[in-house]
Amino acid sequence: MVDVMREKEAILKYFVFVLMMGILIVSCAESVPSEQQLYESARNYEAAMDFDNALIVYDTIIEKYPESQNRYKAIFMKGYIYTDLLKDKNRAIEALDLLLAEYPDCDLADDARIMREIAEKGADLMSVFDDSSGTE
Image: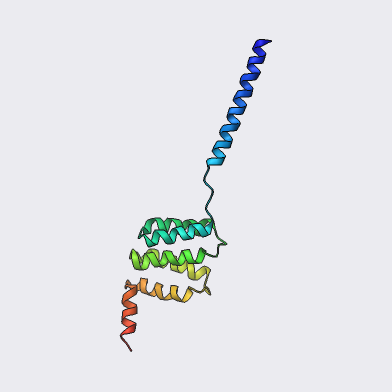
């Protein structure tokens, strides 16, 4: 009888231990950031000139939040980073084509069209503005 009581006590202690560990793990788990927090994080990476991490976060927004109001902005920012900062013509065009295909009437569509032309020509974004200001 004593062995049965010890066995039940051991099982109860084990159950309490497992339960407490589960509570501890759940309470320590990081919460999943919102898409707005992700967008702000990407912008912060960009401001710190950490373009690789900015692109990773923009990709996360694009893939994980298809209905997000920031999705088209994330696609545009990818196009901008690839066009003007990383000078990766092919990836720039790919991002900008995606934006124009999925959001042809968004507030960034005209800028995306111009940026796509710049990427296609392999030109520098600022040189285009410098050229246009000197034609007056």
